[in-house]
Length: 142
Ligand code: RB5
Image (tube, rainbow, N blue to C red):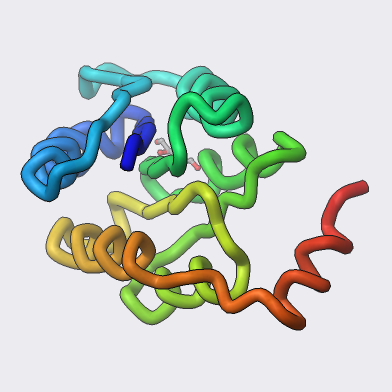
């Protein structure tokens, strides 16, 4: 699978490790930055990732910032994005199963790297349940 990934300065270390992890698992990874710990604005990186998911240039996306909220709020401005914020494996399962999240958002400052790997693994492995959840998703667009 081709996966896009982005982060702000709070998520650089997790992003670098996750890129290596995903490649080891056989995925192609497109890195939308940032590549440094210099203070930056999450929205500068969230929009390019969202655009790539919407255009089908990447199949899914992963976004990381301090709390995850800046990334999630920005990503969800895009009509084609369902960005789900997860902080443990059970929530990562549900954002795939119930919300069909095409972007997984994680809070680098409030989840361990070990947990981040577990969340990514679970989100990628969990199919969308459809049914009543599809009906709810269909009512999201403004
Ligand atoms: C950066 O300090 C922090 O505000 C950012 O990573 C994120 O938590 C915003 O929602």
